[in-house]
Image 1 (tube, one colour):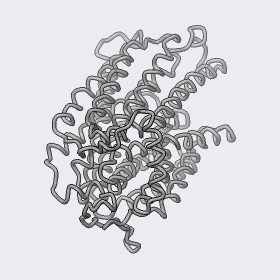
Image 2 (tube, rainbow, N blue to C red; image 1 turned 60 degrees about the vertical axis):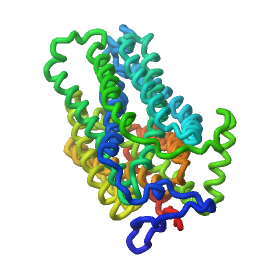
Image 3 (cartoon, rainbow, N blue to C red; image 1 turned 90 degrees about the horizontal axis):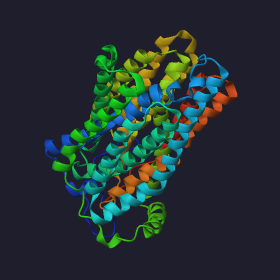
Image 4 (cartoon, rainbow, N blue to C red; image 1 turned 90 degrees about the vertical axis):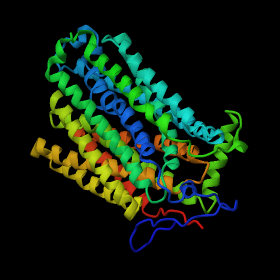
Length: 470
């Protein structure tokens, strides 16, 4: 494939013969035969199944409104005024503890995701590893039931959430690899967008259910011992079990595997280094190497939007519990709809154009939120929702772009590297966010940190082109 300099879109690739001289693009092996809708929707439902872990537990509810609050402070500190420096410092310690767990999880993913992906490719067992990752994620969510509001159990909550992030990423590597088994060059963007869209919509419904329980005072449940939040965690686990079943029943493995690459676990690391070097040295896969690098940067910026959006809303614009949850619902709704729509334009104009337009729009919206911060909450509602409208399309188009240039039989490995490079750069948005806040003394300046990372990703992506085949 090559990108037209006139249009900026990625045209449909020509069918490629597997001569053995050049690795065949995995999508080319499917030709233009569309996958049954049952397979497509079953695959997309996996994003729907696991999204509540990200939306409800990681972002808006369990960590923000429970695990990092006064509920896990010693009684003598929790009883202090909310603005007391001692209490503020203690709450900051909780937030930094959660950040430490996230950092450790990122390192774990950095070390194991690509190797597990490579081993899944070698055996043709992406579905097995998807099941292991999903099952372990469910177990972590169920374990949150035991995280009662006492300081001694704070680290149990951090450990379970961090482990859930690791297992969720392992599962996602294999779910992404299975995309190639149901997509062809004409539909990969649409199907990728559908998956992201399903995920966002699943997150919306989960948040709506939380609002319903909150408005009706948890239907009479006692709110001591953190019971509502612990029930929410268990409900997210049950949700994941039910809605992940279709992908295991209906979606095929993307390839027959590569038995010649079956090696021991530790030998897999040597093979991994060889493969990364090979991606760069081989002219046919060099653009894959550069895309992995550029996407690591802009995807960290995308992650920063959701990771710190709730903090901006609460600390800079004084959003309360209900305001924050309603914003989360609106943000996920807009992100989901825009992602599904953008998936169709991905197939028409190419994923690179979708990513660049999305990043540019997010930079403009982020700058508007920063410079108009004194205008009040309406600025965050408009600017924040514009940011969310373009996060999903950029994420889905990134997955689509990589699927278009992934060699056959290396889907899990390449998507494992996709996860690894993303984690390798995961310090950028948080680092820029923290640095600018420390230098300025104002949380609002953290917005500029996220914007700078998005700009860097935009510039790195500009020279990247899809690899020509044939």
